[in-house]
Image 1 (tube, one colour):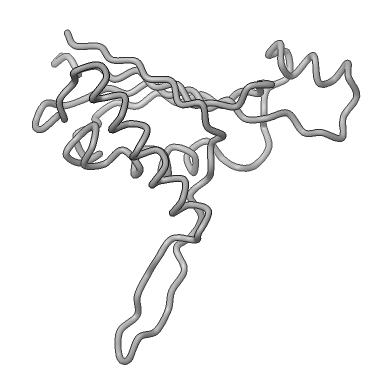
Image 2: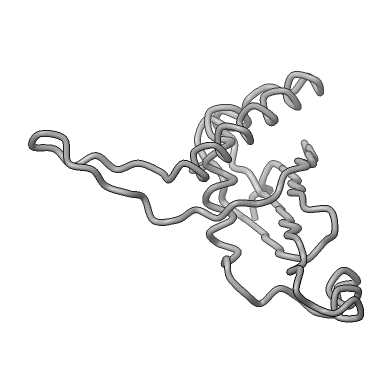
Length: 145
């Protein structure tokens, strides 16, 4: 079974509702600037990692993804509380939601790591605090039952 692990030293960004603009008689949907920049940056980093590891884009096999989002700790808390959050004693049950992180991150890897994120049949996602914001992903071929 193929297993690939990548670590992106980048702070996770949530997918927000697309914006709409009317152009003549059409409505055009687009991402906010922050999401667009994030997806582009993830794509470049993923492309670089794929090249460095000699991996090729997944085309047709179902995939399982295990992704960890490490978000920064809020600044206006005590040192004691900050230490508890970094240790994992306190989990981030605040916004942004984990599913919004997933959407923006996986979309940024479309066409680079996999043909389309429709290949992902199983996903495990985790959101944690860290003093070093990052995203870690493990990609595996899904085993049939």
